[in-house]
Image 1 (cartoon, rainbow, N blue to C red):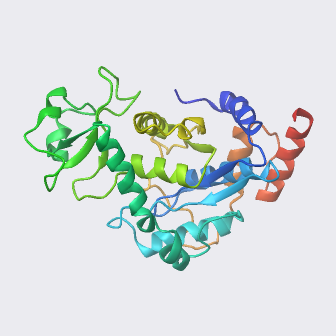
Image 2: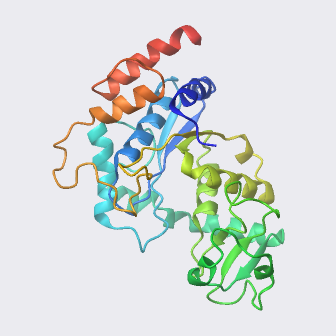
Image 3: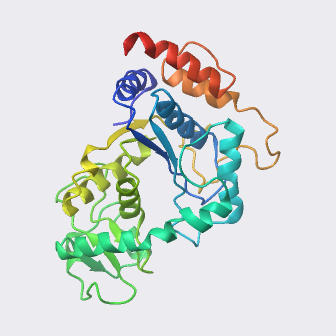
Length: 302
């Protein structure tokens, strides 16, 4: 269930107090569109959580497994946004060139393939040759009888899906979700979980729209026997919405931060949102002011 801002403030400070000097948080944007204010708020929350505990580290991990949707201008926009916010990170690429050379998820394909084979050996998977158009007829559900299609994991042009408990409402756990796409590319839920394990992430702050993804990845970890993943702490923050009350989305064309007038606007509104969400009464004009106020609030409670 999504938290309101008052409940989130309480959850936030409880979460922050679990972050220690050996903790690792991460920024994990996808270069599939220009970033909006909701992305900037998420970046700031993760940065603040890491910086409130000396020794905690922040990773920049750009989720670029989907090469068809990745574009150079979207990748550059991630770095531009972080510099605009004046947020630093401890590990990860410092430029688009470094991403391509060292940090791209394409470099970690063997890890994802090994995870897929482990799931296959556990007999958790089945093949699916249904298209999105065919599945759209069933809404967010996945019919039980589709588990017994006349195809195998060896066939070309089939997706690999993981069997999930039935019955299970889609808002609780995506039913029979995909772990390998029909084009052979490892899917988001698997890739994200494997990367969090690989980089030893301990704390994840993400939007409430990703709660089903969190549950999917936790279920995936249980199937694969990844006990370390089950120790990762998750916090889900509220979502910013547009005038119609819809969540901001890159794919839906949410207003980009500064694409038309690069770096002309101030990021102050981002820090105001974060301060309000975590219960601070100030209106910081910079990330450093936000951090100072949060440290002052937290200090007596440590």
